[in-house]
Amino acid sequence: MNMRSNRTLLTAAALTVAVLAVSSSAPLIAFAAAPALAIAFWRNGVAAAVLTGVTAGPRRAELRGLLRGKHRDGLFCVLSGLALAVHFGTWIPSVQLGSVATATALVATQPVWQGLIAAGQGRRPSTAAWVGIALAVIGAAWATGIDVGVSSRAVLSDVLALIGGMAAAVYTALGERVRVRLSTTTYTWACYGTCAVVLLVVCLTLRTPLTGYALSTWLAIAALIIGPQLLGHSMFNYALQHTTATTVSVLILLETPAATLLAWLWLNQTPRVAALPGLALLLAGVAVVILFSRRGPALPPETGAGAVDVAGSNDSAS
Image (cartoon, rainbow, N blue to C red; front, top):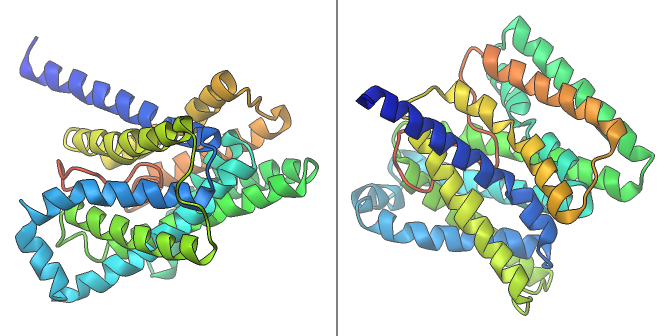
């Protein structure tokens, strides 16, 4: 087997591991018996702590420039971290309030909002991308309309998931301003750190308990950090060295059916059959947006910001 074949197999293996890792995120959140904001804090706080050694070591020169306010990169990192806090502070509660399937699909609309932001900046999406946006909106309306007949709690979950997708798009748009100068590791460390501080303040203000959980919950939080937050992101960044961002972004959409299947088998969350056509239409629309956008979209929220700087790749939120 030649080197190219080995690289292809390694890339395929990395993408498989990455998709499985990020697909476990929503089921783990639904399983964890802890407040949503606390889960969001621990997930980002521990990840930032893990990245501190790398950032303060091999990336210390870049870190010094960031702390000195060079190019206003620090400001944009803080703003990105705030958007990331909104993303986690809305999407994680949405998973706990509603179904894994719907929450994961609705937050995956991030490329749609990214396209609309680009349009607002004068970068017009292609006609096909507009068609994709329309399909995604119709699919989201379908799924949310089904939830109206279920409960107000389910509708609130849908709204929070959509806000989470919007916040992820803002996070990515802000990140584009600094990623031309900052490595993935330094940018991720700054955003995760800012996000963790914001979430800690919110948790303390609301008197959200940050400790006292059962061992099973701590294990779920640890799995969230190791799997989706660090391993999944790293594997996607590795794959981006050998394939296109568009390919990776489309494959990330497999997170929704995979998470739905995992929640069904593990948590006995049976998907609402009436909502499935809407979710399928939504994901198809997002795929069209990704494939036909004039400028390659950043990775969806659950997968983007790489924990290890193995590629100068684009990134995203969660």
